[in-house]
Amino acid sequence: MFCSQKIFNSPSTKVGRRETLIVRMTREQVNILIEETKKRYPTEACGVLFGDVTSEESVLRKIVPLQNVLESPTLFRIDPEEFLTVLSEAERHGMEHIGFFHSHPAPPNPSAADARNMRLWPDNVWLIISSIKYGMAAYQSIDNRVKRIQMIIS
Image 1 (tube, rainbow, N blue to C red):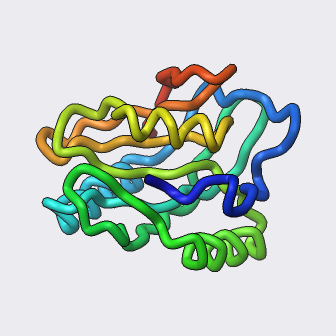
Image 2 (cartoon, rainbow, N blue to C red; image 1 turned 120 degrees about the vertical axis):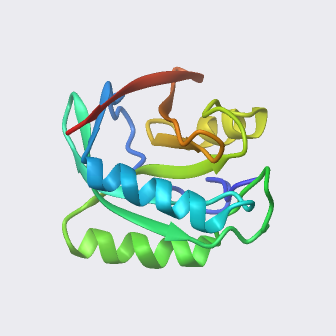
């Protein structure tokens, strides 16, 4: 289970915020996510994504790996205080909270728990990295439905 908006509202969750159709990242950022997944295995890696948001896309600028307080191979939880600390720092540097990443010991598809958490954080990008084949996919909760969104890697 992830910390929910019942605990605190995501400052980047704005009423009327549009859905992200594309998430852009660099090959170096993909490598950082894969290395974090390898480093944390068999525990699910997890963390926060920051960057710039336009009406069509989210552009990833910073990846902040965080501790999975559950130390679980199949679930993750981020400490809300740690999240707020990195969120404040990113906002001081002019970045928005884009979303979250975590790994799965399976293909990069959302679990039932992921889908519940995605609905609690609508409009956020959720990157899932497979710790088996290191494939990656991006998702977003749009109109209370989890949808896969396009990733562009440059």
